[in-house]
Image (cartoon, rainbow, N blue to C red; front, side, top):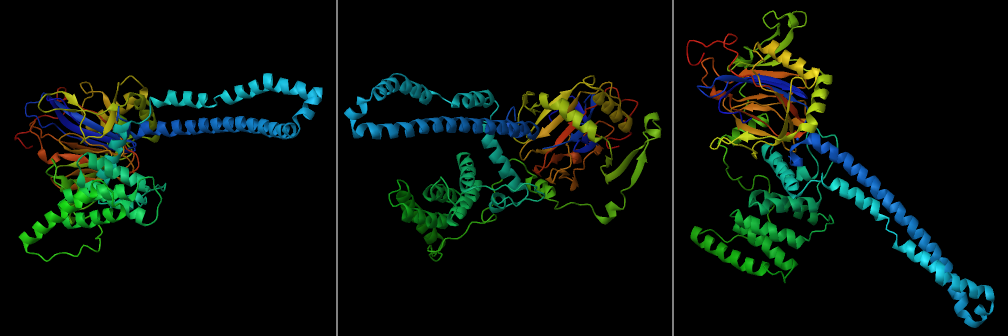
Length: 541
């Protein structure tokens, strides 16, 4: 979450779709204050469009309005064409009769008059009708909405989001293209052209691993007979070179031979094939292997190639936890988890209606508060936050400057306590259940996650809400996964009482596979909490 250097997270996060309260203290040893993060997850969501599902919903209604405008344009064009057709039919009958005996036709004075009238007046009226442009209204409507349309960067970001989901949840391209996702309510499939564009996005980003997966899927669908704008030769061109870049010379030769057979005049295929075959022969001689039989093309599966390593050392652990694998909640640990009623140390506001509390993890202690936010409060917070959403930022550790980062895909807004009584009430509730003062706290932050929205492992706070699939908060260090549950709050400290950082609390928000996720965070500074959470006797108390 990119806190300033002096911030030390106490974390409270509440999910508004799922509310999670998590309470942590920061990792800065000499930090003058605690941060408390309240995380409210309502639904999953860029000033880029793809980073906010909340704002993307507006595009649904924009598109509906444009479709209606398009229908009105078609109706106007059809009315215009019907009028022109009527004129053409009438004039066709007249000209057939007049041209059969021109002198006889004009011998009748009325015919002579009507010919002059038609050519002087009626043909001018027809010209005016033809020159009318029913598209003006549609074009004007398009111009009004175009400023809100996704751009090329949005499309690229959305494509990368699908690839991120593919990697995290180990989904093959065919499952994606056929819409076979867990928890889906709306069936949506990817066409050959969609798969080709996905592969091309990866290719242009020098991501040959994903280029291979998506170009292979495009080819598979073309081979099955699906019609497309893109040609099979174009798909084979990209696929064969991407496979070569992945170091698979034999498969590159197989695919390029197929391309040459399909399009012998292709400007690159012949040269590439000669080059690939030469490299393959050299490789075979050096390895003393038998020459492979390239006559049968071998299919490329999800595990055919290893995904290249990236900057995140715990990538595999993080993604495994997102899939529900490697969770270390043993029977012995589970036996130490309890549920209870929390009255906030006999807080008057909680005596008659104590907060239901469940242990999620024993050490470090992570708890979940149930029914932290009502549905009405959730909708009000979303309503207040939506027009204020902007691309979420993190603080560059080298420069200290706030900047966007690809490992955090969301938009966020900050809500003043006096913007609405609901916010004041939520702030008071946070103080009551955590026992920390909001007097020195920061504003309530609301975040909306986009397509494949995530926040990779970091030492701050995470978030959650009910989603159909994905969206958990995971702790790679000790193997915990906290699943989204709407209206609940997850709470933990990320600092010891001494102010030393508890590095075990490095955590991540998994990308939402299906669904929408909103969260809210509240940071309590250490200043003001001296008597509410005093220091311990050791560094790790």
